[in-house]
Length: 456
Image 1 (cartoon, rainbow, N blue to C red):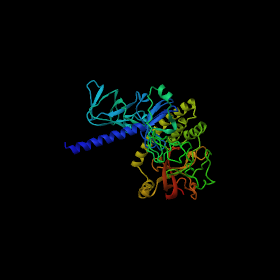
Image 2 (image 1 turned 60 degrees about the vertical axis):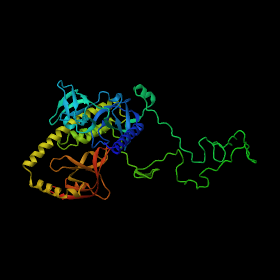
Image 3 (image 1 turned 90 degrees about the vertical axis):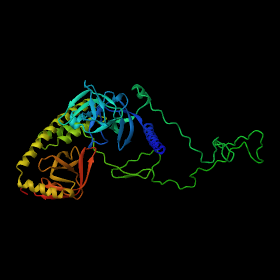
Image 4 (image 1 turned 120 degrees about the horizontal axis):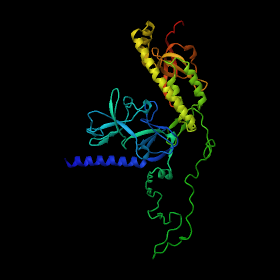
């Protein structure tokens, strides 16, 4: 290999090592402040799934935080016993006794989807990779409907995400109790002098950095007229003479209440819009909605949304242990109804394919022709969960064939939405995922009627 190429490769290796060292130095240890906190495969509720739970007092190492989420490394006692899935394919070779597997090509370690009972077919997100040459301990061989996987210990290179709401920086005592060595702080960096002070603390004009006159070296005489015993004249503050701060600026320590919709300008010039916080829901409100949904058509009831509401209630810091357990049990009950609903909707779609009515054909054609112009297309109906009493008022856009919810529509000033109930509509507007409500919400600017409801 030429010397230049070898030198270039060495520089690349050193660069990667320096980046890794910098990332490790920036990492910090956090302690979990609630029970049954999910570790997810991505910093999002919508595009991820949970693969592990942690509880109060567990410590995790945070590599970075972004948009309210913390990326944690799977190191330390909290992740002792954590597992992952490796697919049984040509990249790994299972030993004859079935207890180990040799990695022959770089392979992914997938996080088990605990919201789907850790089914291999539903566990599709990679959270770590293993290089060839490694030997993995195989805890179990699991056969799914599509894939066969090996259950293996989770590598320390794995990563997951936790909501920052349930984390705070761990103290040395908490780390010691968990058997974790605290990360030493980086050594202080002394910046070079920029105010005329020399490296020995003496100013270039002969005074010490504390304002007193510097000592005269032995054997020399101070210049005539120099007062070696007096301190240097106090200089005015650097901002002297500038205009005082505006009277409208809050005093230091004063609490400022920001209203929803206000824009906050940061010191770096970035702007942030203050969002309205969703109201804190109560368990009795959830139970009232549960009674309403139990009377609705099981194929179209909003059981998935209500399940997310119970889960959101369960992870709130002020929820008691007994109420949290009750909410989680309700969520599990609703999960069964979600699965039943999905089966019913699949059967409904099969029936519609076999014998679809002329009206249905017209709706499908119209929706297909206009799909790119609309944020959501479907039957416009009221919501039993988001009825404006316990939770914000939202309308449902349902699939005209299967009945499942396509999106929710928020009320908008200047738009009369109640007369549209029962109509097949196309909604023009901005779609977003509401983290507090855990649903897709469209803010409409226009709602078009695509076809009239029967009898209208």
